[in-house]
View 1: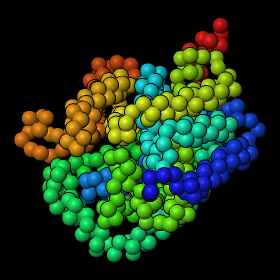
View 2 (view 1 turned 180 degrees about the horizontal axis):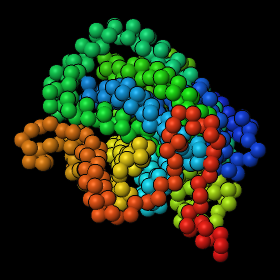
View 3 (view 1 turned 45 degrees about the vertical axis):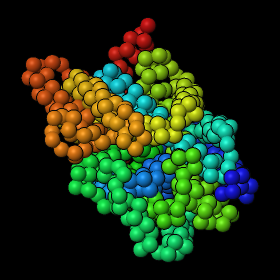
View 4 (view 1 turned 90 degrees about the vertical axis):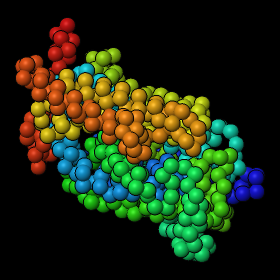
Length: 539
């Protein structure tokens, strides 16, 4: 970069943005429904997505612009620990395969749109459902905001200043999401993922050739980390970092498919076989992620300097430095477009939770199908606006820390959802207390974690030092795992005690057959009305 605006790169990025915007608005006619004034059609695409569409959509949903920017940035700054994203996206798919199939079966049979719908019916607790819905919305908000980090990095690299480009981009995103619902990001995902694959393949071949090969790249990285400036940085993991690394990978794998946007992608699938095929095929994205992580070392070898100390700019700056302007424009456009697909799906998922589990359950029990869909549409706009304000009002480093908070928060929904899928003895009140305790403990530990790199005293990372428990060690553990452990302990002990005391559990409105192979063939059966709905109907 020469300090000014690169006109060619800017023109290409704008052209790609206009292309996906047109696709977003046209998507309303793609797999056209009789009406989008229905949350199943607007928020789940009518549950009609087959294998290829689901693969591209889930890939675009899971591997976001933040992933493409932040993972290499972490490798650039700390080295080996940044590769935690690779093992966690390897183990996650076999871990969630059975759970995803079981959730799809019961959701399809009863018309559930959100995970909180399932919790409400399985455990017979509107309070627990509200807790899970609120958890999903809160955890998703920073994830949406972080998509803006990728767009900001692209804009800075091109040489454009100010927040107006981001505001315009998300205004257009809000418009076509409002109109087309889940069909918009599903269609755009084809373009986004194709661009990402092209850019990664070219980058992994061309850049090492320019830098003298991978031997020189790793040598440059080893030289940078030869003198440890920060705890646990280096090309190889230190002994004290191993537990923190593995617990972070495992916890991230547990959290990934608890997020509302990934569950939305699953519930939008046509049938169980679609989910099975995708759990087998999605690891192809992990290969791409592993190659992307290496861009962090390539940036070190290329002598990349972040713009304004914003380490998230290292990949865009690397592309700008190593590629000709025309291909750099395509690469930067791929990063920017990569933010739009997940941001759209995340906002739709959060909107579904609000409309179904807050608006209809507590604000308007007699809401019609059309009113419920309208509430979801407006909620999707509100969620995007909130995320936009968060990023504009906070510095990039703090906004990245919000992702760590989101992961710890969403993990606390695991007992209510997963234990419910296997119809365990978990009691609704134990689940609610465990959720609250895990959430509070996780936030306290996050607050108590400093960041030696930035000098921040609080919310400085998601690795909690075991020395805080009086243990004489420098080993750390992922905060989310510690909070989840407390959550599960309370659920197990509390459930045993409550059932021994014969405290009434909630009525289970699901059926055992809902979880069985072939449940999709039985047809969808609506749940019986809740007592509140019956009262409203008689009055």
